[in-house]
Image 1 (cartoon, rainbow, N blue to C red):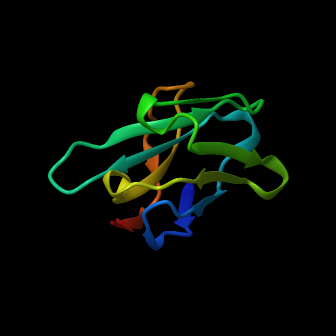
Image 2 (cartoon, rainbow, N blue to C red; image 1 turned 90 degrees about the vertical axis):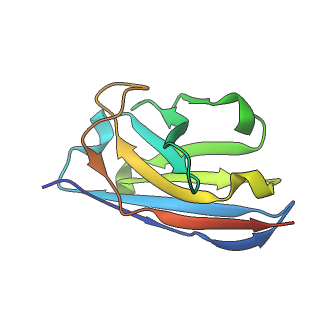
Length: 118
């Protein structure tokens, strides 16, 4: 059974930074692309960015230059470094084991809340 556990969310002022982590178990983590998604109240879940098994990442336009996805295959963990946070980044953030790069799979974490105050 694949399990994904996110951590690292919290309350931060605009302009601040947070690093989210997603620890995976029950899967061969190193062969899977991983994605980060977010869902704000009243909105659909959206892709923030994804990283290939080899470590190449792509991002949605709204976070380019501010967010960085990385992974440590030895620790079965994917990270989302978020800098220059804005109030519109406020959402629950989820990681996802991708079917293939950019295509969400069936396995999700429980989510971690990120709140950015102005």
